[in-house]
Image (cartoon, rainbow, N blue to C red; front, top):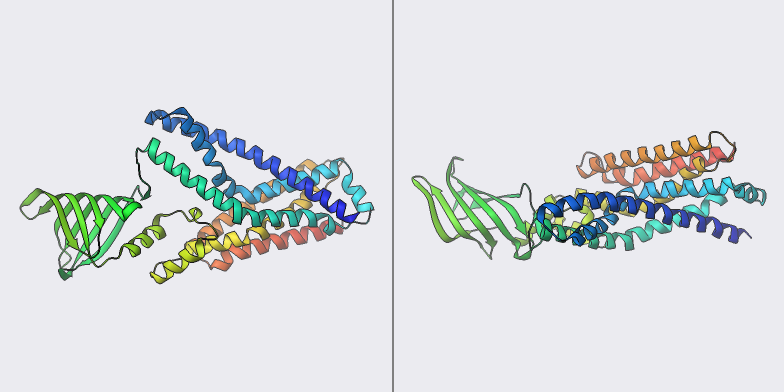
Length: 368
């Protein structure tokens, strides 16, 4: 009897979660569709591209609001059971409040595990496909760009004269062959005085040297001298540059829980900061606990008798609490990524606090 009741509660929660997730997915789709239509209209791209782009963005947005989806689904589940007086019947059959919440909490925990091992990688694939379509049909880029907008800045000593320095700026970096476009190189002497500038349409990182093509040189009285190609000796390694690009420009959400440990190890060996990737990795690991905590918090706000005039108000407060927790967790995560607080404090502490709040609320509800 108890097993059947637990399965019934878990089934109700899962159905509510799927309904809430579907509703939010449709909302996200239509909002993104309006934005995509504006983009393809300006680029004269096919209409179906906008539909596909809007669809591909859904998982990324769901990732951001996943804890809130769990909270709303759990509140809806418990309120539905209360409105039909099923909770009262279950309580009279000998179930404690802890036994009622357990099926939903375990279901949320399983959803959290599946979210990071299955939904996460799927979301990454769809997000990458979205960026690929956006680059092709909106920005007219045929290759994957890993650095754009402000571009990337690199610094190295002049191999021919170690007392001098070179500052390199590339506005675009293509993942394929680590090719850089719209490159500018400034040369500074030992007194830190600028004396030469190179502008190149394209730069390739070769073994031991940089190959610049379609180059314009400005040095002293020589202005706008054009050369087909120029080579500059370098001590930079392509792997190091790629890791630097990944560290500074790549969105952490584009790496799955399976890829992050290796990436973190590679960044550490390269001497680059791994903080934001560690924070994201631990936030993924803590997600199942956070999901379970959301159902416990929802129990307090959702389990109210339908005749109780404050029931709707309690549900509203529950959703507001979920929104506040989401904002706080986002702020704390950002502080952790910037290194202002520890990785543990920015990930596991949030999940633990939510779990503690849920436990205290259920304990209070049980003793009312």
